[in-house]
Image (cartoon, rainbow over all chains, first blue to last red; front, side, top):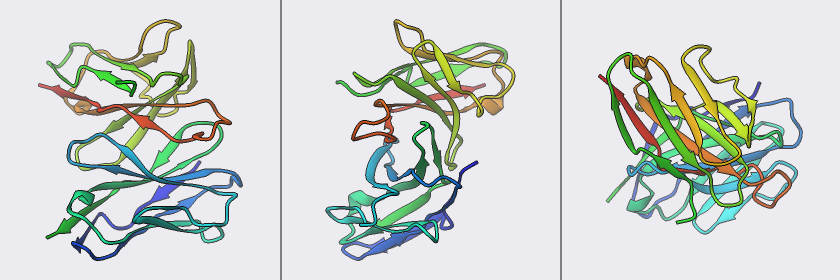
Length: 113
Length: 117
C-alpha cells in the first residue's frame, strides 16, 4: 500500500518570500505520478503541479516548482514570490497507473501581508 | 460548465435517514472517485468506479455505504442510516482514461457537505 506523509501541518510565509512544503511517500512501484493540489478556503481542489516518476527533470509551473528525489521518495513543493492568493491547504498526492490517488494529510499555508 | 458537478452542495440529515450524493464527471472522463474529508483533515479514499463497475472499494465502510456509476446518469454515493460520524465533506473526482497526457490527475467537484443532526 502507498502512503504519503506531509510532516508540516501548518506553515506561514511573508508575502513575496519563498516557502517549501515537504512531502515523502512510500511505494514499491517504479512508475507513478506525483501531484500537489491546492484547496483554497472556497474548498474546491485544484491541481498545482504534477510530476511523472520516470522524468528526472523537476516540474515547474510559473512560481511553483518541485524538488523530486526519487531515491529518497521525496517530493517537495517550492512556492516563490508568495502571494496572498496562495493561502490554502496543500495536499501532496501519489497515483499509479491503476487509478486511485493517495493523499497526505495536508499543509495549511498562510501567506501574511 | 464542463467540470465535475456535485449535488447537493449541502445536505442535512437526521440520524437514521439516508443521504444520497450525486456526481457527474467531467465530459469525456470515465473514471470516478469518491473521497471523504473530515474537518481539518486530508482526503481519504473511499471508492473508484468506472461505468457500471466498482474497481476499488477498499476505502468504503463495510456497512451502510454504497456507490454506483450507472451506464446512464451520475455516480451516486449512498449512505444509509446516517450517524453523526458521517458528517463530512464528500468530494467526487474524475479522471481521463489511463494513457492520456493527464493520466493520474484528478479533477474535483466542489464537494457535498453532509451534516447529520
